[in-house]
Length: 94
Image (tube, rainbow, N blue to C red):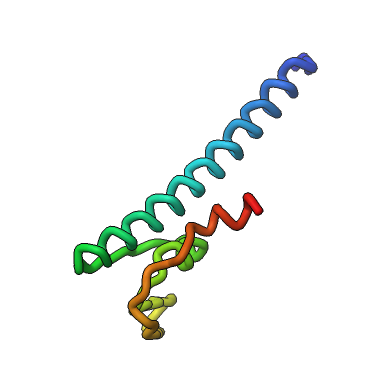
């Protein structure tokens, strides 16, 4: 097998692009979560969201948080029904 430096560069570029897209997708999810919770509260509607991404918690700012763990373990926590004041991404801009 012939090893060519361009192959390494191609792989490196693919990895960097993939990581950038993952971050872009996560950032977009935070913006959508923030806007959905804001609109739902304004309209007096409920949002039921299921996700494995714990980093969306601040943007969703739930009034009821049900955390289903592996097996039978479940925790339920209640919070004030108040909208998130700002999207978590705005903290990065400071």
